[in-house]
Image (cartoon, rainbow, N blue to C red; front, side, top):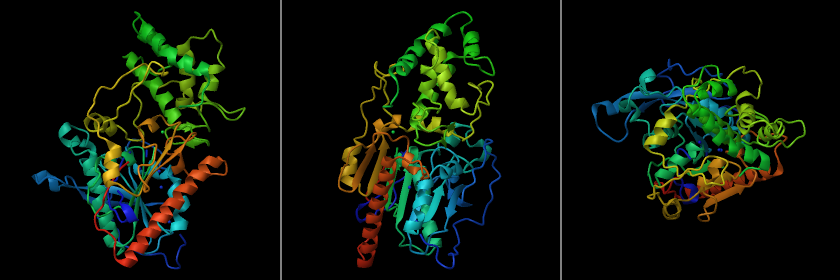
Length: 476
C-alpha cells in the first residue's frame, strides 16, 4: 500500500487496501541510494520468518517530525526501504509501494504484481516501510512506550516520510524526470485520501486496491446464532472455564470478549483473503477458504455445514474459525489472549483510535452482532476527489468486507473504479499464477493499460515542457 492529470501530479499517498517496470540494459545501473551506507538496524522484530524476496534493503535517515520546530523534531531515525532495480533504466518510471501496518518484507512478498509488470515498464521498484512498524522504529524498543512517543505515529508524518525519501531517491539516482507511480493496498492506500492536495512534488499516480460472500445459508445462520450462545455461556458461574475448553485455549480465558474477538477476526480475515488460489498473507489458507470451489478442498463453511446438526452453533462456529488459525493442523491449542504479534501490527490500534474514521456498522441482517455508528461529520470523499484528484485507480473486490468503504464508481475520467464481484482484499496485487480466474487476469490487464496510458501522457508532457511541479490530489 498522489496524483494529478497528465500524470504529473506528485505525492499524496499512503494507506487505504488498497496493490502495483523492463528489459535489463547491458550494464545494470549503478546508483547511490539515500542513506544507504549510514546505518544498519539492530532493532529486533517479533519473531517472524523472513520471506525470500528479490529486494535489497536500505535505511534512510528520516526526520522525526516534519511539521514542528521543537528540539526533538530534528531527531533522526532510520526508515527501511527495499529496492529492486533489475529491470530499471535511468529515466524509467519508479513504482513505489507505500507501507502498511507491518514490516515491509511482508507486503513485498505479497505484492507480486509489481514484479510481474516490472519488465513491461522498465521500472524501479521501491517498497517503503511505514514509521513505527517493522524495523522503522523512531525510538527503538521504546517506540510504543507512551503517548508521547506514539504521537509521532500518524499518517501525516508518514506521508511526509514518503515524500522526502522519494525526492531524495530521485535526486540520488539523477532521475528527476522519472514518473512516480504509487501503489497502496488497504491502509497503504487510504492515508493519501486524507490529504487531497499536499504538494510534495513527488508522486505521479496513486493506485489503491482494497473489499458479500458466497456461502451457504446454514453457514450464515450458524455464525449469526453463535454469538448469543457465547454470551449465554459467558455469564454462567464456570462460563470462562467452559469457554476455555470449547475454544481449546492454551491458557484459561480471562474475558469472553477475547473469545468473541478470536471468532470475529477469523471470519472477517478469511472473507478478506478469500483468494482464488492458495495463499499465506494473514495466515496459510487454501484457495477460496470461505466456500470451497473444488470437491476435496477445505473451507470454513464446508466444515460448519458438515458437522452434525445437534452440535451447538458455537461449537460449529469455532470449528469453522479453526481453519483460519490452524489450516496446517499443527496447533494443539490456541493462544487467544497471549498470541505473538508476528507482523508487528500493534501500532494499528493506536492509529485506528486516534485518526482513522471508519464508519463500520452491522445491521440485524448481518451474521455479526448488530452495531451502529453515529458520527455524522464524515468527510465527503467524492467531492474532494472531484475537485482535486486525478490519475487514481480504485480497485475493489466485493467479497472483501472493506470494499463497502471503498470508491465503487468512477469519479471522473481519470479517477477510475474497477470493481470485481469475486475479488477479495487487493487480490490483484498478488503474484499471477496459472490458476488465476479469467476475471482476475482481465482486471490486471485493465490496470496495466491505464497505467501505461498515463505514463505515456506524462512523457509526452515532459517532451513539451508542460509537466506541473505540484501535485493536485491524493487518496487511498
